[in-house]
Image 1: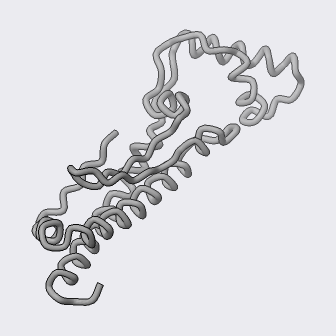
Image 2: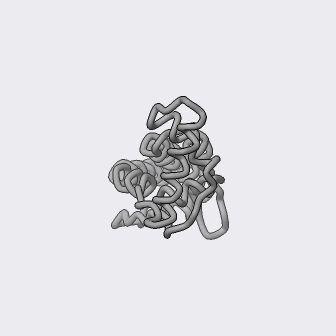
Length: 166
């Protein structure tokens, strides 16, 4: 999912990139870093927990390119995509479901864990899984904060190029 932010009047940032490119890029990188960490934290908090591995796999990064400053929030775990978008019917590995059976359903006896995991896997094989959209919820819930961060950055840049203090 992409978050496209429309700030309305971008003249302060455009002017800053022309008149004080190093300073402007520094401000934009710092703002993007702050924004991506906010979205990362929110996504991690929205992520359903079993072992926490998928939530811990969510990271953020900022890159400065000739085209601008780019912020990325993502996960290295395929399960993040499955949780976000859901799945079509498929037979998942039963071993992968066993931790969920223990942690979420509270079943401890090994034979019962295997039996219930098999039943859950069969249901997924028939119906797939529903999308839970933790990333989408994170983006939507932080959107106004991210916009406010970049509006403040635009003000900071404008203040700098018009002779104010950084």
